[in-house]
Length: 163
Image (cartoon, rainbow, N blue to C red):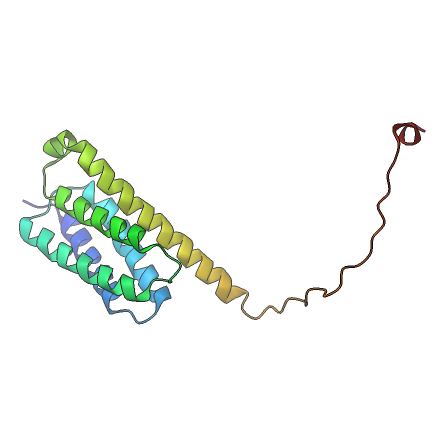
């Protein structure tokens, strides 16, 4: 029998990944995907999911990845995005394995967890950068000087500085 928390985790992950796939802006996408991946990382520790739920989550991850290719900032490395989603798919696949056997495959699982964690950290940084940009969008910086101001450079000899 599946634990109630595990069913709730799967439902939340599907909801957030579905929202990420349907988003129209990068900020909304990053927020929804961050919530989905955070719930995925938390849910894996609680129990085991069925093969049917695994397939459903895999489909949601693929849709979210396709949306990410369209919505993520162009400066963001596409290879990193692909590795992050491949890692998340590996984590979902590992979630179907009971805990004792999952530990036996720990190297493969660790690599998947590492790549999905990197993507999650990147999403958090992107969200924070977007918040800072929105907060300071109205700030007008003074213009940079066009001419270099002359300045004096003073040299002190060791004897003068001791006096």
